[in-house]
Image (tube, rainbow, N blue to C red; front, side, top):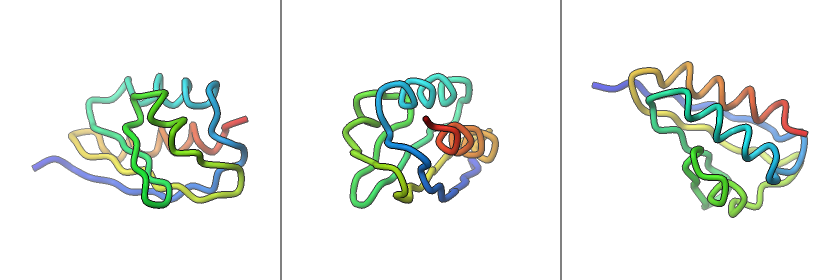
Length: 86
């Protein structure tokens, strides 16, 4: 059974193209499926356009969910990328 992990992150800046690209690169290094949830919207962390479509802005809270063999590490890495978004 694959592992799962969920973390909450408060965005320090808007989720725009540059940080979305960094998140995609980070998520691609793991085998787990990573999703970012903002309100009622969910986006695969490997899709720049899906991340931009979330419309997440500075000061808002998002949830990082990962499922797979390396889920805890994947969730933490993507959460760290979100925390350093500028």
